[in-house]
Structures are given as C-alpha cells and as structure tokens.
Amino acid sequence: MARRILLIIGGGIAAYKSLDLIRRLRERGYGVRVVLTRAAQEFVTPLAAGALSNDRVFTDLFDLDDEREIGHIRLSRDADLLVVAPATADLLAKMATGQASDLACAVLLATDKPVLVAPAMNPRMWAHPATCRNMRQLETDGVKFIGPNKGEMAERGEAGTGRMSEPTEIADAVDRLLGGDASAMKKAGLLSGRRVVVTSGPTHEPIDPVRYIANRSSGKQGHAIAAAAAVLGAQVTLVSGPVSLPPPEGVETITVETAEDMLAAVRRALPADIAIFAAAVADWRVAAAADQKLKKTKSNSAQTLALVENPDILKTIAAAGPKRPALVIGFAAETENVVAHAQKKRKDKGADWIVANDVSPETGTFGGDRNTVHLVTARDIEGWPPQTKEEVARRLVTRAAEYLQENQIDV
Ligand code: PMT
Image (cartoon, rainbow, N blue to C red; front, side, top):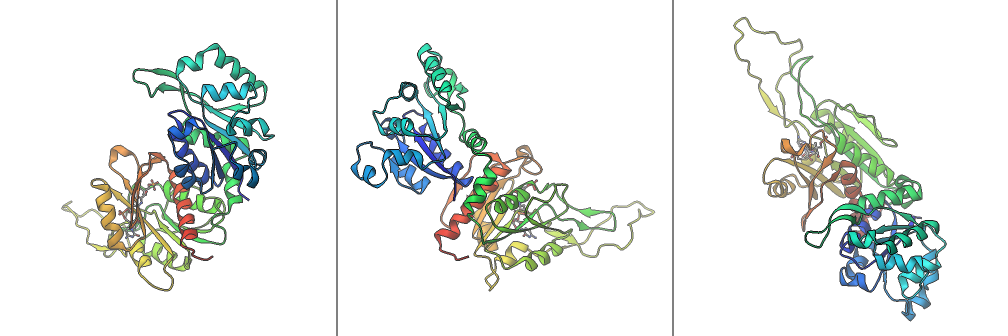
C-alpha cells in the first residue's frame, strides 16, 4: 500500500505550486488526497487538484455526503502524514489556537498523525510577533516546518522571507519524515510485474585497438531512469555503453562497447513492457577498424576514416513486431529547434514518446546533473521545468507506469 499524504492547501498565491507538489509526491509513490480551504479555491480549482491527485477533493466540513462516506475524523486518520502547503498566517493562527471552524482546521485538530507545514506569506506578516508566537506554539505542539524561503514576493517590489518552499523541497521533507522515498515508491509498486529495458551512456566505435569514436554522455540520465524503474518495482535490464558510474541497485546491468553490441543486448533483453533509449549511440562506425595500432605515415599527411552507418537501435525495436514493447520511449539530443526536431524524430523512428533535451554546450546536459526536457507524444508537447536527472527519471517512469495502467496493458 502506498503511503498516504493528506495535503491541505491554504489560500495564498503559492497555492498554484501545490498542484506541482501533488505531482511530485505521486511521482515518489505517495497516494495524495487533497483538502482545499475556501480561500484556496480562489487560486486553484477542486477539478485541477482532483485530476492531479486522481482522487476526490474535500472542501466542506458540513458536506453531509463527505461526513457520511468518510467523515473528517477518518479523513485525518487515514493519512500517514498531513502536509499544509501553503500555510497562510491565518491558517497558522487557527492551528495554534486549536480552532475547528472549517474542514482544514477540524482535520488538523482531529489528527493523531505527524503534520508538516510549509508557510507562505508576506515577509512582514511572517515577522509579526503574533505569527512568531503562533510558530513557537506549533513547534511546542510537535508540528514540523519546511521554509519559508527568502526571495521575491508576488506583490511588486516586495522581497524577504515568506516564499513557500519549492515542491521538491517539500517532497524531500516528506521523504525524510516518512523514512525515504525509495521505500514509499517500492510500496506503491507501480511497475511491479513489468519488464523495462533502458539504454544508457555513449558507445565506443573502434578505430584501432587503442582509439575509438565516442561522445560526452556520462550515463547519468539513463542510469537514473533504470534506478527509478527498479524502485517502482520493475524488473529492469540496463544496457550501458562504457561509463564510470556504478550499476544501479536492483538492476541487471549489461555493459557493451559498440552500437551493434548494444542492439544485440537489447534484443536479448526483450520482451519488455517499456523500452527507454537514453543512450547516445554513435550514428557511424569506422568501416574497417584496424587490427593493429595505426601508425603515422612518413609524409604525415592527413588521414581519412571511412565511416558506415550504425544500426538505429530505437528504430529497430520500435518497428511493429511480436516483441515490440507496449511503450517505446526515445530521447532526442538537439542543439536547435529542439521540439520541432524531436517531433520529427518521434515519427521517423516510430517511438511512442520522445524526451527532447537541449544539449547545447551552455546547458551542460551532457555529463551534467540536470536536464531540461520536453515530453513529446502523439497528442501533446509538455515542457518540464529544469530539474535533476533523477527527477526527470522519476517523472518519466511514473508517467510510463500510468500510461500502461490507463491503456489497460496487462502485466
Ligand atoms: O548520459 P548523460 O551525460 O546523462 O546525458 C544524457 C543524454 C544527453 C545523453 C540523454 O539525455 C540523451 O539525450 N540521449 C539521447 C542521445 C542521442 O543520441 O540522441 P539522438 O537525437 O542522436 O538519437 C535519438 C534517439 O535514437 C535516442 O533515443 C538514441 O538513443 C536513439 N539512437 C540513436 C542512434 C542509433 N544508432 N541508435 C539509437 O537507438
């Protein structure tokens, strides 16, 4: 059973970030149920929160249906953790004085579960002695806090301490309180019973016994994807070119050198439900690699290497056939017109989805720890915020798991 978070969204401009928080928590395998205060509904709708949490949203203490079906006492006790984000000055004051005048307060008063609060308010309200007093009281009551951060406020010209922590910071705090995301995700088992194949890293195409053609891929993105799929319970085969990373825990890792070896290893790893091609495969290899180390010629004149095209692993595996995985995901490494080129690549290679990333040198994507991507599907183009490669991996495999569920592709 997934660990359950009851997310109480208070009425502040930061409420829009709480929609992203729902997604981040679900990516980590948590079940999320949402309570919206009346003021929060001025900023986000129950429809949006319900679509993201994939659950009913609760808004009213005196909704008889709610009380009959679930009741505010059970609502508070069904959760493993209550998260209040954003927590306005008003909500903090009500919590500190034990009020139960609306559903959010009543749930917070009735709970016997840990409570994590992410305050967000104007810096002067945050610094006010009344808020300081309420915070001290809540700390004494055992409430945990994350943030607020320093920075620009929504009001023009206002800056200081009062910004709500970022959704990933809040999700990290949830992980810490509940003992780590890995265990929560495993419990969710979104991919249990599924087979996933991932390619990662560069390929090395020999020129002679000591020289080769390669690229700057470190394998960080592909390895993170394999690790994230394993954490969700999948049986994962990672086919990796030469990298200096350790094999991810719980993943069968096969190391290869060339594109041809990579294709053969991927074929052996099939059938699979999902195949994700994150490797930076060399498009060409030397037509006839030398058996012995090439020597400089006497004249020292320029040498020419004759190249032939490598097999396209993604295109080969995406072609229709009995072993085609139900979901084939490619990457597109682009330096210009990123989305347009990725859309074309998706069609040309027969992939279901393409993760398009800008690999211009200034982005530091190749070899770096972060990636800014667009998810290109047949229906949509989704821009994802800049994030770590682990976050891209978690989001991608969660989406892939949801796709299999939504399309009722059986285990
Ligand atoms: O390894 P990192 O340092 O973490 O960097 C990550 C990354 C930038 C390498 C990764 O995010 C990425 O973009 N991988 C794809 C790189 C690439 O080769 O892109 P491409 O646009 O040339 O190829 C498109 C797709 O076809 C890719 O899924 C690629 O794996 C696949 N392909 C390409 C050529 C080939 N012969 N066979 C293939 O399967």
